[in-house]
Amino acid sequence: MTVINLSNVVDVGTCFGEKQPCRLIPLGRSLAHMLIHAYTCLRGGDYVRSFTAEFKALSDPTRLRALKMILISDGPICVCELSDALELPQYQVSKHLAILRQVGLVTDSRVGTWVYYSIPQRVSDFAAGLYDLVKHHVGGPVFQRDAARLKARLELREEGRCVLGPK
Image (cartoon, rainbow, N blue to C red; front, side):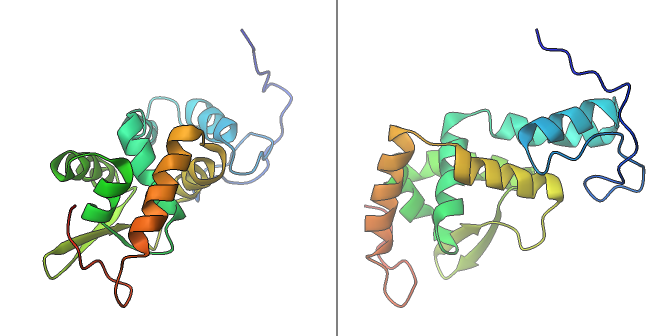
């Protein structure tokens, strides 16, 4: 078990836009920094519970795959496009996207009969760190296959919009 000694750390400013000082050496937006901050500076508060909700939302592989595809797309992505990329039924993808939306990791918009999901325009430093982590450090064969299918599906768009619906 690794123990992190924070007894000799000096105040270094504020983290995540909070008014209270952070007593951590700035580690950028790394996952380690987010976890250490949550459990040392804000122990037991509502703020920690908000971190927990985001981590719970990303604990499901389907939601992690969906978020990764939204992050690598160049803009909003239609549910049916995401469904085809993940090779899952649209109702199942929609259920998982609703959970991501509830914790604020994605936002949705309706254009005609299509619902598009994207990253919110304004996000916390914590969420930005999670996006960076997922986009650049979560990978593997499943994500590569999803990305290839997404790329092929997005090439079918007309004027930048989904026109096919689910396959």
